[in-house]
Image (cartoon, rainbow, N blue to C red; front, top):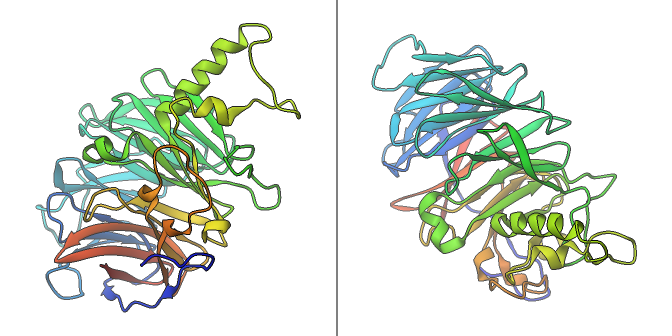
Length: 386
């Protein structure tokens, strides 16, 4: 449903399915690519639950894998009977086919020095990346079952999230509570592109705030098969309630252009306040950064999670959840490639009230287009999006 011009989008009260299996707050949910009806969730109870959306609202399998909260999950890419669960400072690997009364991990990785916030597997199932409270990202070689590289001296605060780039084999994006988004060549162990959202310029002139900083809580990149349609982009969930969509390749070209032009005296233009004219540089190919803030109906508190939709026209919608107890579905692709502006209110497609603060979300298509939400309650909600 599109929002009417000059008015905020309606808050629709949908009646979700309620998946029950956890004894404490739900922390993470992932949807299978191979079996669209399969959802896996984790919680502060140290439990991992496997739900089949074709069946009843209770788990088909319950795995008590830790005495500590399970903060993040990911499938082993291409082998979704195997799952990685991050709990505390540890990553555990389980094969669901080895059903047992007591679950013992096939692999254990204890390389992170502080609590892990996000674990993710790359598209070739060769590496894991784990972002932690120490501001570091550990890259783990799955085949050799050893630490490959530590990405440090980048973030100066908690590293909250990390994603592999499906179109670049040796690169990851990380985001943290220092308001930094960093692009790393993990084969070399150093970042070569940094975006500081505390000073990030948008086409509307909005920048980060001192009182309510633009911490990077979550990032999303399109899956490999989406890239041809939606381009090589990244969505950033910010602590000030805004969401940015940036073209990664354009940003990289811009930083290279700046580095080159800075070597030529007097060749780099400045604004009146002496700052770089970054909007012009970043838009070399005519594509501008998309800034979804309160003027377009964005969140009124920190955005905790963001994802590209996997149903329908894959990647058409961007979905965000926040501490304001709202889930928003953005028809971000309705913006043209060039001439983006903040005067088109149709970008907010759907506004959903949820009972609690949102911790995680994912999407899948099984009979209906489903939006799965983990919040600070022990019940997982599944909304049907039509």
